[in-house]
Image 1 (cartoon, rainbow, N blue to C red):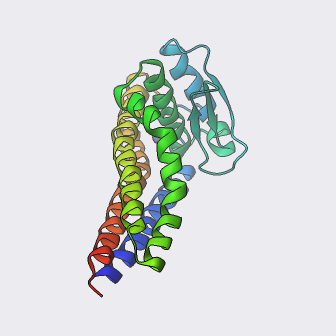
Image 2: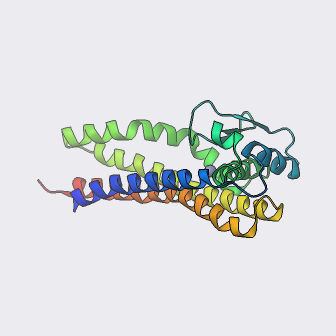
Length: 221
Ligand SMILES: [Zn+2]
């Protein structure tokens, strides 16, 4: 059972990664009929929502490094997303703008996430070292490590509605503003769902890791 949880948690993440990369490769080839690039779509969406001060620029970190930086108020899009008008490009650009809108409107889960962020970063840095020490020395550090992982898990769970909300905003805006045809909406949905699945897989994977460690902690030897 412990082995199953261990392997399962790893395989699930690999499946999710290959799913999103597969979807990206597929929808990168399909051009949207309206021909707007990711950068143009992002600029328009931000302007429509009054976010004139949010900047759109190219991310230097390569493929699928697209993100919204709330501190710099900047939507950073990878080169392909920024310059191309594929279904993948405009879906991702619209999703990142969804995060910018969440930030500007103080979307509840974003507020919770930002409050949690510093302690979660610390917890995730410390957790595996503490767990390792707990297992080696067979002491309560293992329990401490599990608690740290649970903190990280709660954070991952709070991230889920944020990601789903950004994607549903993206889909709604793309169709309302006629950035995509009705047929293309299905493809946008598939691209966004593949991306969202990586977050769901992350949550399940973490829960499996925690369960495995709880079993190890309860092992009588
Ligand atoms: Zn996102």
